[in-house]
Length: 219
Image 1 (cartoon, rainbow, N blue to C red):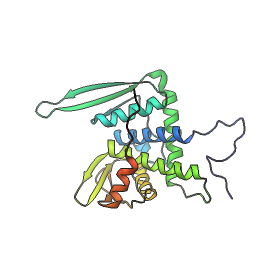
Image 2 (cartoon, rainbow, N blue to C red):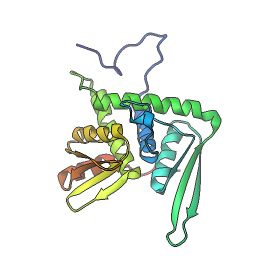
Image 3 (cartoon, helix red, strand yellow):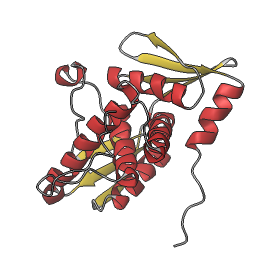
């Protein structure tokens, strides 16, 4: 029997892996960045690391607040600026900025979490995986969909709940994550993007229930 990556005993000289709580928070943050930033030639390569810019912009406040909350969990200080633009059609822009001194650590943890989370969700299932790992994979799946619902391009029709993303790896992760959440998904390539959709009905309900956040902690 092959031991799983997160369950494997490690020597004292090997840095310990991220615990599941930290991994899930950082992976969701990485997914939010993949939704917010356009793909580059390097990122189109399969398994390319997440791009972790020092500044990221969202046109939805809830997406910006979610990333800010996740970075706070990861002890990464961030500033949040709100700007209003447009003339006839007004819009809001929410800009999050990470201080230069914090950027190396922030990029490292998001990169490591993206690689680990991607491997957990897209890699072949491990036989006899521990209960914490099975639960952890489900939480990673929910985190990916939560990020996409917040920051991806919504494509809602009467018969489907769809998300448009420009990142191929993230699209594949959403399909595999939907399967883990018992909600079969369909992937359709489009012009410059990928549409991942689940049918209305029980599948959509399971996705929404899995990605629902509890009440905020008391201040």
